[in-house]
Image 1 (tube, rainbow, N blue to C red):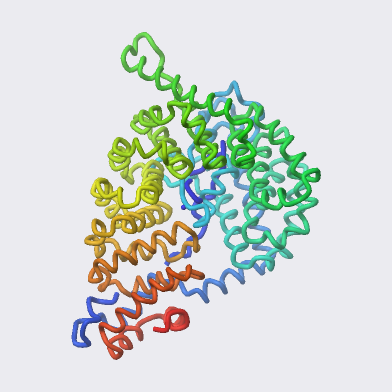
Image 2 (cartoon, rainbow, N blue to C red):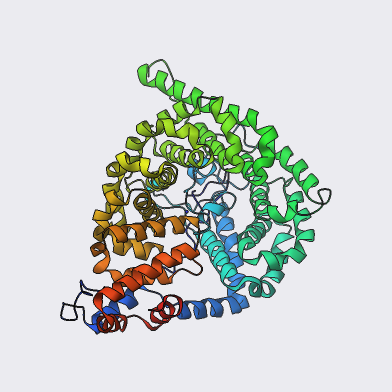
Length: 578
């Protein structure tokens, strides 16, 4: 995924793709006399594509245990923004270079790219990318390149936050003695830039260190609630996001302690005059936003409708009408995505009473890439939340999605790919008429040199999901994508998206076992990347591994497995008995 989902400060700012620890059997396992890669070549190939878990853990541990390194990681999260703001003091500079952090009440200020930049949709548990899109940084990195030609404003701040998230998930509570003294200094600092970075740190470690943080939450949650009223918009927004990361703990406490004051402040933020905060509120409140969301929803739909109408009039009579500012429509589309994700199935009644699907069809064909990007994100969220309203439009939507599988516009392509994967899981076998519209492009993307890892991950997941629901249509192309597919997914965390993708690859191997033979070692490595697969998925892995072993014979299998790196060999033996 994260999870979904490039950065967008208006809702859930992102930490793009935080875990870069990604990591041939030459067509033989049918006879020991068939041609095989030499042991030396195979070993070098494996070493070039796989990261030793032991070495990685040792590197992480060495990094974590150094308080100096931890200090630098935390400070870098704030330094990047401070440097950015220093370079953007001149209010007469371009919109891209305007100082974002000092804007407090901006309802009269045109949206900057940092205000409205839509996020990448991806698994929120694959990386923090989807999470931080909902609430972190909004500064951008000052890069002059077009946003659609770069995966995100991947700056030192986001790298540092991503690194902390990885460390938290690896070392859990062991991290806290090294981090908490620094965190306290950041959270209660008088300078807002420093305080905001501390709130981001607190949100970044929530998933990995939740149990260890519980004793500190009675003090920290009231502080975060107070930050919702901070005069700086970025502090308010990041506080919304961080509170959403600890929402399960909040609702488990007596309501008078934290929930009621939190709701009071969050509802105040619904009236927030800064555009960034409202999307964060919708995500933080989730279904609690339901009683208050209809006017917000209708306002967003009206904004989209009016912008489209103005664009049509301008296109027909450019001499009479001004071109619309589509930035506001992008804000509205992203807020609708926030509502769909936060409300889940509860958004169905709102969709039913509106013409949003008709408007979405138009937005998906807009000439502005950012509009299409946000449209595909909304489509994916609506697919998950209320597919009953999306399904009647699939015949019209799928060709548009297929034509937007163009990696020249990475953000658009990424969200279109993600939306296709979500549609697959809802359509099931009914996806069959649309497979050929998208499969060739997806295979080209996953084999394309220098494709960003986030796009590779989403593409691999969507190919796997296509194969899961339509294996007969996808399996014949297995040999064309199996190697990059395995290397793209070997280092993402266990999660539902990875689960569905691997089920798809297993079903496709059953249909076309010859398609995986040449690159079977990569499949073995991808299987070994799982920490805790579900029992039935583990059984699928077991049957494929033992089926190949039985087909080639014990002697050939031993010769083949001798070329595995030691850690891979140990894991396959321990978990699958091969």
